[in-house]
Image (cartoon, rainbow, N blue to C red; front, side, top):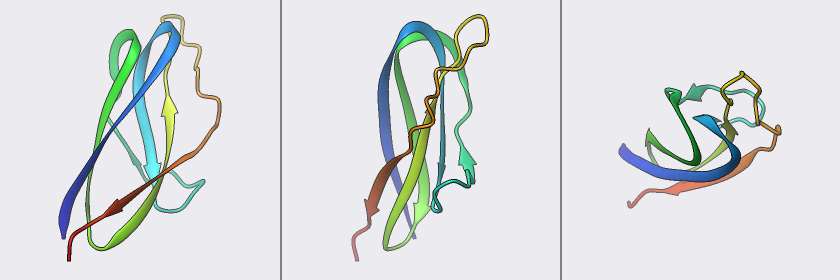
Length: 85
């Protein structure tokens, strides 16, 4: 098993929080990062996972502005980790 990580970055048009949901099976969010409650328009979240072999994760970006409105558009993205043999 190997620790694999990725940094996911995005921008919002309003200052907002930062969080990532991710999973091996699209549509069922197994993991989530701790929400960064600092309001910003430039977001950066590190995702770290213990894996073995080739794994594709699905992730969803989540941001919430100062009045609680979510900027999550429901779009899912994929990320593939490849570990050395």
